Structures are given as structure tokens and as C-alpha cells.
Length: 290
Image (tube, rainbow, N blue to C red; front, side):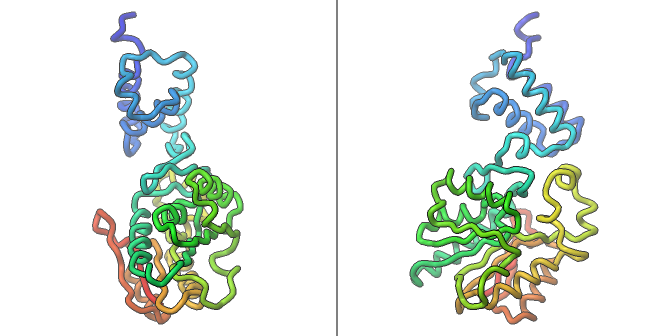
């Protein structure tokens, strides 16, 4: 067999990209690169200087198994065990949602608010529904004077978040707590900022989600009642008595419920209610002040 016909890195990438296209994956080339880099125990960028390399039989076997599972719908992040978020790699498991680029807007808004409040001394932040800890850790990493509390109802998710905090050297400034939203905290001012990426998918939306989300990611972290507003409403009610005066509440949401959530916040007495749009121009974050 000539070199051109052998299964070099380049040929594996080209064949797998075409295979993923036929299986309707969202990012065929990227998926192929991530899975091959995982199989070769190298960085994705290193593939481009190893195009002529012939992976070993064991490496090709590992790669074939990952490709098969991806083509069946399993998310790449679960296959390789991590996902990059806010320029940091985060361990993820099927006990946690996979962090998404849209959620980075939640971090950006949080850091902007904290920067404006920095004259108030040491600030206290609570991330509700922390999952892998992505939001809490990104905030702690970029706002080093803040203390962060990360809350999740899932003990398994909290264990993942704790490992991520250790990896990114912020575990000493984050307190992890298993609780249903803010129910574990007394109703008096504790936090300057409460931030959350809570469940906000309606029952009808859930049925339309792609199979790689419905079949693999935790349903409890996605579904929020018939219209998707139940968890955010409950969180907004619980947040008010636990925020210091002039404190802020930020929540990610679906563009489909943005207007309803904004009106709900106003009805609950929140001030300066606004929404923040993502890079696609869709309302993605609701912000309010006590």
C-alpha cells in the first residue's frame, strides 16, 4: 500500500469529516479533530504538523470507537471528558450540562457588574445550579477579590465542580453546597450578586431538542415546567431577601420566555430590569437590581 493509501492522520481526518457530514453532526471537521487528538493524546493543533504520521493500531481502534459513538449521537464533550468555556477547560460528565458559548455572556455581565461594585470591598457571589462549576470558576478566576458560593441540587455535579475548581486553583475561594436553589440560606442579605444558568426549557421545547441533548444531558438541568419559567420565577423570589441593597440578579434564559421573565421580575419588585442579547442577537440574559 502506498503512503497516500495508508491511514495517515490527514486521511483519517478527511474520511471522518465526510462520515460525520453524512451523519448530520453540527461540526464534522471540529469533531473529527477533537476525537483524533484525544486518541493520539495530543493537542488538536498538533495534528497539523503530524498529517503524514501513521497512528498505531491501538490508536486507530480507540479513534474508531469514539467516531462510532459520536455518529450515534453522543456529545463530543462527554466522549473526551471536557469542554472549553471562557478559555478554560472544564471536566464534564453526564451528571453535568455541557457548558455552551451563550453562557459566557453570563460571566461577562457578572464581571462587568462586579467591576462597577469593586469599591464596596470584598464581594460575595452565588452561582445557583453550578453544574460543572464553569460560571462560578470563571468568575472566581477573573474577579480574584470575590468570594463565590456554588450551589447545585446534584451531589454528583458538585464533585465534578470541585475537581474543576482544584484544577483552576480557585477552590480556596469557592464554597460548594448541595441545595435546591437558595433554600439552604437564611432570608437575610448575604450576597452582592446572584447568578444562574437554571433549567428554562419548556415541555414543548424539550420534545424538539436534538437527540444528543435529550438522550445524554441531565433532564433535570434543562426542563422547567410547562412553559419554562417555573425555576427562574422561584429563584427570583428566593433571591430578593438574600441580596444586599443594590445587589444584582442575573439569569440565563430562552429567548422564547425573555419577555415573560422580564415582566415577572418587574411584578416581583425588581428594579432596572433589562435583557442582554447574545452574539446571534437573541435575548439570552435577564438582569435586575434589588
